[in-house]
Amino acid sequence: MAQKREDNLEKEKLLAEIERLKKELKKRKKYGLVWEEKPEEVVEMCKEKLPILKKVKSKEIMTNPDKPVNLLIEGDNYHALSVLNYTHAKKIDVIYIDPPYNTGAKDWKYNNAYVDENDAYRHSKWLSFMDKRLRLAKNLLKHNGVLICTIDENEHASLGLLLQKIFIDREIVCVTIIHNPGGIQGNNFSYCHEYSYFVYPSGGRYINLQERDENPDVRPLRNVSKGDHLRETAANCFYPIFVKNEKIIGFGDVCPDSYHPRSANILRKDGTIEIYPIDVQGNERKWVFARQSVESIIGELSVEYNKKRGIWDIIRKKTKFPYKTVWTDPKYNANLFGTQLLSKIIPTKFPFPKSLYAVEDCIQAVIHDKDNAVILDFFAGSGTTGHAILELNKRDDGNRQFILCTNNENNICTEVCYPRIEKVIKGYKNTKDEKVEGLGGNLKYFKTDFVAAEPTDKNKKKLTEQATEMLCIREGTFELFLEQKRFNIFKSNSHYTGIVFDQLAIPDFKKAIKDIKGKFSVYVFSLGDDTFDEEFEDLKQKVKLSPIPEAILRVYRRIFK
Image (cartoon, rainbow, N blue to C red):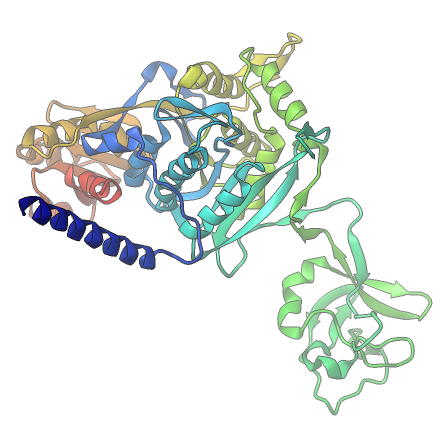
């Protein structure tokens, strides 16, 4: 009897579990990307340890104090991205990444084990890996920031769906880049291309127009195509363009329907010519651009005398074009301008580095301020992105800043990425013993480290003591200005960062900064979330306050939940 009751109880539990699973399945999306989630050790460890950064002073490079300080972070990129979620939230203009392609050739590790083609969870592991990092990266992009992610055929489709899932409010465009003209032989096809996904906000222009100096597109502004291109098909495209001394001096209003100019050119008494889109048969046609938008392309317009008709005409010389979705320039050849170029800089071999020019053009394609743009690459590999930014800055005297993150598996950071950046900045001798001039620039080198996550007073104190590098990175203040036992002050130009480790030291700190001109970001240690506004009431115009470590812990609680 007892056995029967136990059997019935087990049956009830089983039925209840089946019902629970049915309900769970109903909640699942009918369409979308679903995979078997695989826990990742570097993620799980953040429940017990919190990532911080440690400066490696011996690897610092400073060649020009007036230029921005670039960052190289050695460590797992999940931990580096976690730190950047505090230091650079909504501050990144462009993210360019070249993640593992998951070819099955043991080219990346998951939980310290190489993933090969025989791994049944190969694609699920890759998606779990990328999903966590892309979600952290999304928090870093400015509202108008752009993500660029390269991939090949192995995970091309999966990546596209994953990006759609994470960046649901953005546009996603895939560009094909011919990077290996000779092709890599597959079972049925020879692969000669890879892909770059561009992810940017919906609406508006976020991708530059491409300069084309050779063979510009030259055509009359007047619509000369056959078909319905007469005036009545677009009334707002019929208006005069004013020309004087062979230069465009303005645009007239759209003509009323009742007005019909007697010819394509009408000469005014002051020498101004009114030019209308009228063809050789006297048909009133239309300009290609409506009146409300024509002024936006005035730089592409010129005046040309049509000898055959004996009139002045408006010509559009177009030298800027939208980027195409297929890029075929020979300079994207990854062997010539990736592998061979890298071997001329450092002797260490690195598998499949990107073409320097492919990376340059991807970043150049994105609209951003060359004097303030921050570019992040958290799969830095051989450091091509950093090299590309230094080249771009040298070319147009820009002040772009790069942040590179890479682990040190197989000494990739210490023997490939860092030496490459160092040589490109300082200059080097290539394999032919020829001197290559340095591009200049500054670099700070950091390693990820950890403090205990348990929220005890002791651990909070330790996190505050270890957070100095994070705070300097957040504020961009790297020069030690004043070092005291209970507080430190760092500076950059006229901006200062004060770190007060003991709130009892606030009076001494205030005395130290009283006569210093400039703005201060001040971080004060607190076991709670005290703001210390009252203590700094007399300096509120000069000081911006933040309690630590609570501000850091708040970010970590959100991303590690």
